[in-house]
Length: 489
Image (cartoon, rainbow, N blue to C red; front, side, top):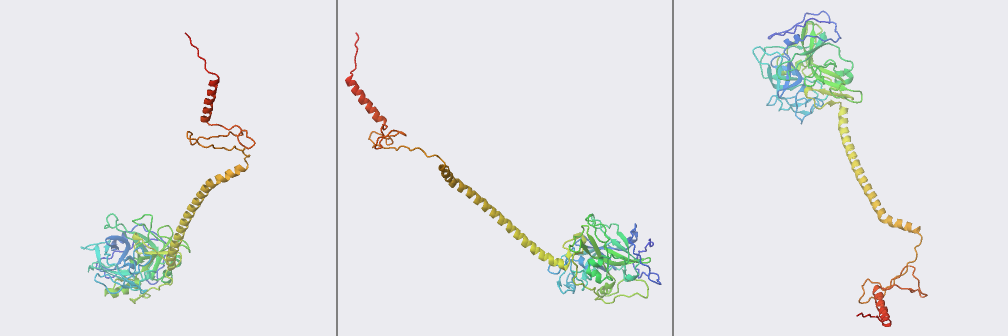
């Protein structure tokens, strides 16, 4: 299990690291195991990419003090160009001639015009500083691979050039995968509190050919290019979010007692089931893919104008890709249903790159969702106004019932009411000057007796008439019966 203490010290000015000749290919172990010590990695000059002074999750495979590899989807591109759908940052590819800032522009392998975001400033932090020098390198030029595809993440590699001409160290690129007996997956981080001091590297050892069986189903790029990609489900701690584990940043190939950097993190495919893609960092199965650098060394050399430092053993079977225009096979469709693809700076996740079908569903689904939302809103408004009209109509019916129903009810009640007794008519005599206008000359009492001609037998008299009759009667009485006087003496 223990493969010996790995010798990783690559001193300044070292010209080559050679393993002892091997008569036959070593047995490849497929067992996953974790080492408790990462002191071996302290001797390596690892590096991290910073954008505008901010730490990213993107590691840099240094070759020397002038050049290094980085994943192309870790770079920023302008919104007018393809954004590398699904990259955590606004990543895409940009190639061609360098502009005045040194950041290359051009078009991707799909022919879509691309443009670098010129506002982003790149620097690289080196984990083991130079001798009598500094540990921060300013990036003067970035050149994504001309075959980089921002949707599938094929050929996801870029060359960064530093404004330093230092040659005080050399880091070797492991250039022949068949001889790797094991691999080290490494995550380097800066202390978030200082953003300048290095934390202890995290490392996991893994079998060289122990890729997970679900990797091909989750990502068609991997299924067509297994020689260029490594895959597993291993994750490590996210220093900015302890609830969201992320993949490792770089991979080292091990040959006997020798180790060299071999691959960089490229992208991840997250899936719940065959019908529904899953979000990153939510506990769903995540397949992480790492791009092997060996086939892109000659492309880098064509830009550098000199040989790149590579490491391999002296085996007769050794071969390398000499074509600087090497490209992976780009699948069609570029991603599959049920998986969401992420890549780039995982500390700054933005828009995921779902499958092409998912992107179509996203646009169609968004339109359908907007239409359904508008229809639902119209339905609610219609229901609201209909309800108001119904309430108003109900209120009107109540008022009409109150107004007309009173008479209807009275008529119905009158139908069942016994007939009223005849009310005697009231006759009005002519008014006299000394009478009130409202005085009735004749008032009949109900059921009063009548004569044969239907005239009142005993008509009522007004008070004035009664008073006059009383005076007349008193006068006559006084004449017939004069008052007697008594005189007393």
